[in-house]
Image (cartoon, rainbow over all chains, first blue to last red; front, side, top):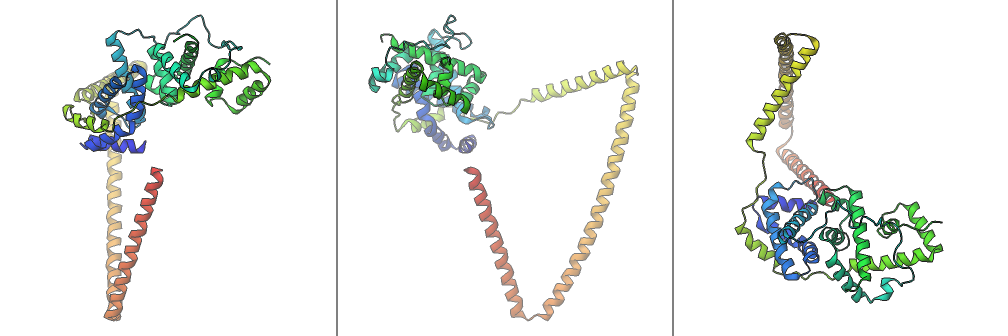
Length: 187
Length: 201
């Protein structure tokens, strides 16, 4: 974190190599995030480039009291929201439950069925998870990817989205159960 | 014993449960085959999700962004525009006047009389502060005079002592003093560096 602040300070003084170092530090998590959102490598690389250029242009408004990675993911998330809006893709607000009739609290998967870990080989299971991710509403997909692909903490996700930690935990829980149900459906 | 809720189960798999709740989940899982199966199912699902293959990033990715930085205006530390300072000053002044008006209304005093009273109090305060500063400056002047006298007396003693010591001993003393000073600087620098490293960790 301390190193990030130093690289930001150097970039603001005109050191472009410092910004290249920032890109090297965060290129993999950002490409993974964008890639899981759009599911296409070339598009993910193009979008990630645009995100880093936006980060560079906005670096003057970054405040060192915030974690740099959180600020970076916030810019990436806004970029993706703009993309979905332009594409007019259906999005589900995080403020609305995806299934109002389902409280999502009770154990629901048929207990007679063997665990997904026993039913599928790991490779097949990953393929099914990728296909299920594609069918998840973007707002829930984003939280699922942040938590289980990028490994962000609930606190970081709450800060990025400007939501209470409890709300984020609840939405991640819903995303996981939606995903788990989608695994049962034919791809 | 009632079965686990899915939220509880995910919190357990997330490592997000306090130790007492974690022990309760584990004890229940030993006794309940149904919950044990669901835990195994969700664990396999989340482990597979957390190990999805990463997207391959070309080695030239960062340098190609660096090459495009010329096309983007260089970032600058954002400063507050002048109008925000003017607005802050204006709203502060308005709030001050409004507060005075409210006080005058409550106390029944004439606002101008109240301001004159306030001004009188402020002048008294400034007068007191100026007297204190002048007194402080006088003390500093006395201290500097004493320090100067002490310094010149010390120099006289050194000169007289130097006259009694032979030139080779004087040279040896001077060299020792330089070595001690240099060692002090080196030790101070090493300590500063070790503190810096500790801070970085």
